[in-house]
Amino acid sequence: MQSIELDVNGMTCGHCVTAVTQALLGVSGVVHADVSLANNHAHVEHDGTVRLESLISAIEEEGYAAGASVSKSNSE
Image (cartoon, rainbow, N blue to C red; front, side):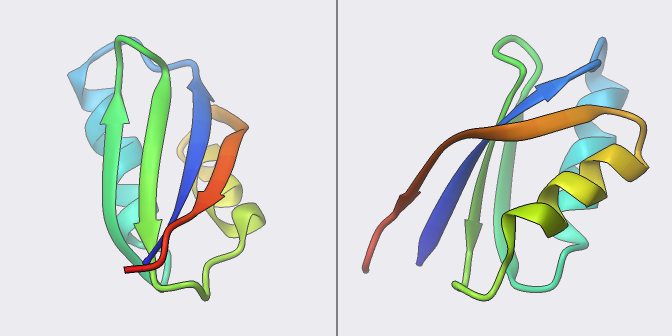
């Protein structure tokens, strides 16, 4: 399993968190997404086939800005 950390800007409420979470989960290969309004952050776990650009595009399509925070890979 691999993970990607993203900074997400423009979220102001719980609905925003839900929209970003659903957008991330809609990207093929994503298995889990944890989005934090308080930290303007998203932690995404995926199967290794996901491209950072795909995640950012999915978030931007919902009307929010996003960028890579810290990328790391974990083998399990």
